[in-house]
Structures are given as C-alpha cells and as structure tokens.
Length: 216
Image 1 (tube, rainbow, N blue to C red):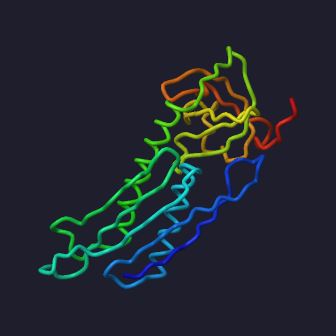
Image 2 (cartoon, rainbow, N blue to C red; image 1 turned 45 degrees about the vertical axis):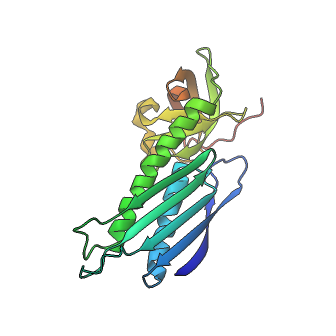
C-alpha cells in the first residue's frame, strides 16, 4: 500500500472574510502504481466539491483494483469519504463483472459525481434542520453571494447578520444567473421555504454586482 497525503487549497467564498480554506486530502493507491496525473485529477474533483460545500473538513480517497484474478486488463474501485459538519458523505464505485479495461478517470468521475449528489443532499438537509428561519416581511435585503453550485443551479447569499439564505437560478431576475459570481452584492426578497430561508427574487446591484455592503 502506498499512501500520499495532499493539501488542497481554495479561496473561501465569503468576500468579507477573505479566509483560505484548506481541506486535508488523503489519497491511497491500493495494489496499483502511484500516479501524479491521477492525484491531479483528484485535486480537481475535490475543488469542485468544495464549491458545492465550503465546510468539508477532510477527504479520503482510496483507489484500488478488485481482487478478481481471473480477469484480464485493469479495473478500478474508488472510495470517496468526506467529513462534513454533522457526519460523513461516502461514495464508492465498483466496476462490476464487466469492468475490465475500465478507464481510471471514468471511475473517478463516477465516484465523485455520486459524492457530489450526496453532498448536495446533505447541504439541503442541514438547511432544513439547522438554519433558523427569518422572514423578510416582504421587504428587500442586501447580501453577498458566498457560494455557487458547480453548475450554477443554486447558491447561498449571506446578509450582514451572517445567516445563509438559499436561492435558485430561477429566482435571479432577468435570467442573469450565468453572470452571477461569488462575491457579488445582491438585493433579495426572503421567504420561508422547504429548504429553510430562501430568496424568492434576487437582483444584482450595480453594473457588475460587486459593490461592497454599506454599514447599516
């Protein structure tokens, strides 16, 4: 067994704090040769997961070959374990009986995409359980976009009180979700939703939507 521990750095999404996130990533090559290229691909996938949820505290990845000695060619099993507040997210990929000659990058893709889906489910569950619901009483509020889903399907807004407010791309006025970036200032109307507090409408402020929040 060969063990390699990597540190993946990414910029935190909150514009106000400008803090650096560091996720310890433990990569184990089990019964296969170590590969720098595979490590690099794993770093890319971990970065994508951090963009889904910036509170991952640890990631463990095990890459191996199933013990099917009668097979010819290569097949790969992948296990991804994420440590997150409130628990773990575990995803695995097994090539099955017809997995000979499988590409390791395809196996990584399948395992990390499954981890991404589970992570999104975890985030939604956390929002329902842990986020205190504050309604805006129909009035608009200002906040900073602190997080965007990899596919820009949804994200979080952080108002000055430090809460996280969910928003969906359909809530962004004028169909401008594709132009929204982390750090943008927005005006939004808040309501109570199934996922916790959410924005019913989101409007970018200013020409580029990147004005700093004014002190209240």
